[in-house]
Image (cartoon, rainbow, N blue to C red):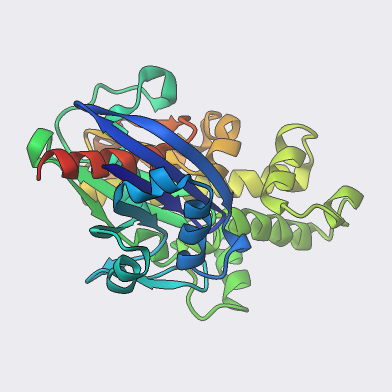
Length: 329
C-alpha cells in the first residue's frame, strides 16, 4: 500500500506519493502548487489526488499532512492561511484508513537526521553531541521545533515559539518595536522574522531615512525576494540595513531559544527566507547577536549552528515520519 504525504505551508502545498520498499521507499509522484490556489486543505488534497491514476489512488492507505499551525486532538487552525482541518472528516471524505496531521516544524525536525554534509552550511562549526537539536524556520511565518533522543526513542516536539514577544536589544530595535506597536496589539518575533516581516523591515528603514521606493519595487509581487535582491546584488543601503536588522534579530531569537533548550546537538536554520539570506547570515552579524548573552556567551559558543540548504526538508521529514510509523506498526 502507498502513503500520500504533504508539507502544507502558507506559500506552497507540496505532495509526494510513496511506495514503501524494504527499509526505504520509492517516490511515485511529487508536485507542488501555491497554497493560495486552494480554499481549504480538503481542496488541496483533492487536487493532488486528481493528478494520480485510479490504480495509484486505490492503493493509498495513509495520508500524512505537515500543516502550518498547532495540532491538537487531530485538529489544526492554520497560522497563516484561513483554513482549519480535522482528521475525522478527512478520513471519511477520502476513504483513508489513516489520516495524520503533524505540525510542519515538527515534521521538519524529523528530516534533520537525514541531512548530509552537502545539505548544510555551518555558521558555528562545533562538534554536536547527543543533546537536543533545534530547528528554526523563517518563511511565510516563523516556526521552531526540537528533536530529542535518538533511534527508537527519538521524538520531535513542535512549538509556537515564533509568537514569543519581540525583545529588542538595541536603540534601533526599540524604534522598530514602537513602529510595529502602532498597528499590532501583540508584536511577536514572527512580525519581523518572516517573509512579510522582511518587507516590513524594509518599509521601516525607508521611512526612517525618508527614502523613495525604487521603481522596480512598486510592481514586484514578492517583496521579500525584492528586498534580498536590492541588498545582496545592488547593495541598496536601505535594503542592506533591513537585512542587517533581520539577521541580528534572528540571531537574538535563536540565542534566546538556545538558552532555553541547550541544543548541543545543533541549531538548524531553515525556510525560504533563511535560504535567500544565506550570504547575509554568513557575514557575522547573526553569530554576534546569537552569542551576545553576557556571561552565557561561552555556553552559546559551544552550540553548533548551521543553515539547511536541502531543497524540501519539510517534505523529507514528513516522509520519514510516515515510513517510520508504518515500519513500527
